[in-house]
Image (cartoon, rainbow, N blue to C red):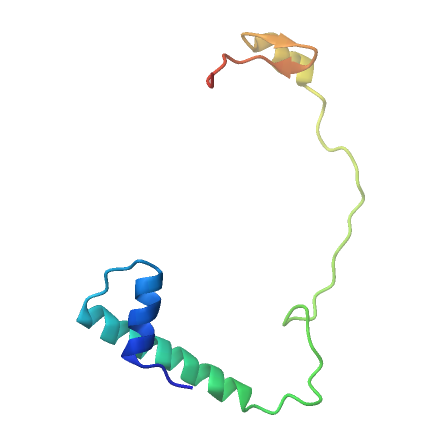
Length: 95
């Protein structure tokens, strides 16, 4: 499939883009190269290829869910300007 400058002009007009002739030519070249690549990819025989979720055979390494830090919430709350019921109180910034 190949596009023409009329296609690019129409899409530019629909998107409300003010494209110059140079931009139309450059965009046309880029879009046609993308479509050419897609055509090449569609010609590849993929029968017998198993779909993958990821290109590498990776396994999720699980670890024990263990607490590694001490709870210091009270210490941090005590140094805060305003705190109530475990929450930090901040000035209202949106009316």
